Length: 159
Image (cartoon, rainbow, N blue to C red; front, top):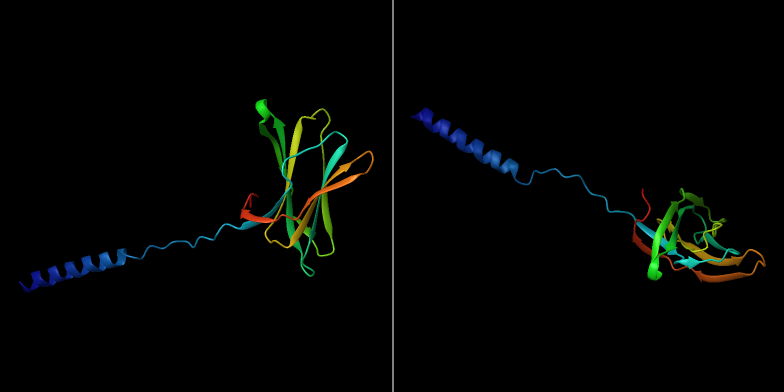
């Protein structure tokens, strides 16, 4: 009889310990939040064959280097004025020191006059300024049509 009580007590204690061990002991990896990107966007721009879009980036931080990327999308006109993505190109990370300016020139490719393009500049910090210019390649006339406009958003650049 004494042996039955000891066996029963042992089983009950074991069951309670197993139940207690099962509650709240789930191990979970800590999820890191997705990195935010700070992005300046040219919007969709239609260029003529004698124009180029120049995108210039400079940092506003005097003592630090910032990594930036350019993303270029071209769009083709479809029926009823709709635009469809034709191609996308993303640059590698380019380091921009406090005394530097980086720029890219984008042209309309020969025979593709019905394309429009959009250039976005992204970085993990907001301390940069972007200037978008449309330049006439024949006369050199320059039109600055926007500057700045940096917004934070979820990452659009594959990490």
